[in-house]
Length: 259
Ligand SMILES: NC(=O)C1=CN([C@@H]2O[C@H](COP(=O)(O)OP(=O)(O)OC[C@H]3O[C@@H](n4cnc5c(N)ncnc54)[C@H](O)[C@@H]3O)[C@@H](O)[C@H]2O)C=CC1
Ligand SMILES: O=C(O)C1=N[C@H](C(=O)O)C[C@H](O)C1
Image (cartoon, rainbow, N blue to C red; front, top):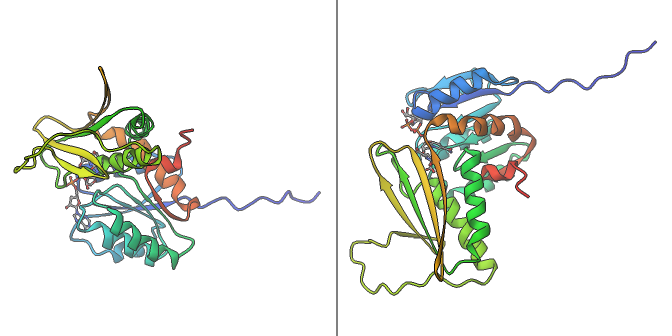
């Protein structure tokens, strides 16, 4: 009797966590250790050289650092043929275009930039975008802990991009607004045509409300992350999936079947 041929089992992703001493990084280290089929290869802080990732035999990089450091970290991963899952905020259109150009030279490498790893948050953004064409007005409020470095949040930017694109595709005009004078920017930032307001308050974690207004009614799409555990299933999903999705995926929704 001949042996049945078996495909060689896929090697487990070996994950290097960048920003391992940070609030997200510490939780991610625990999550990677606990996840079946993932191996923790290295934990890097801000003083560790990136070459430690290669020395540790990592196949994947998980970037949970700061917006100023993230592009160089991801570039290093791509140049070394490592897949990258990125939770760090600050990945605007220019950075993404530059990364896509780099990835074109490394066609087997996958990168996921996930402005939010929480499935609830991804669903809330997707639903807000779906609803946005049906309302005259839409504005967004994001509320975070005061240690956050950037405003508006990456999630708010992503949500505004989805909402603005959905409204443009449906031919919906801008939200009505009679404001003539706003010397101090009280109307907030405008991202892709959507007013975005950022609150920083002790006691908060990460929260977002999309306010949708029509004649005589309001719909509020709200998501609350009370604890960083909310992000870990998405982190693990990203790490398990990214190698099978070469190129750049922007948003965890790219890995979810949202219908
Ligand atoms: N995508 C998502 O679901 C989430 C994303 N975030 C984002 O993740 C990032 C990190 O958030 P937190 O952990 O709360 O911040 P944090 O400030 O607690 O941690 C950041 C860590 O990165 C380290 N660091 C800075 N430069 C580094 C480098 N070059 N190499 C290695 N480590 C470096 C810092 O020393 C610090 O320990 C932020 O951009 C935040 O907005 C936060 C929560 C959820
Ligand atoms: O800094 C945070 O805390 C968070 N950052 C991400 C963002 O900028 O959207 C995700 C979440 O909002 C928590």
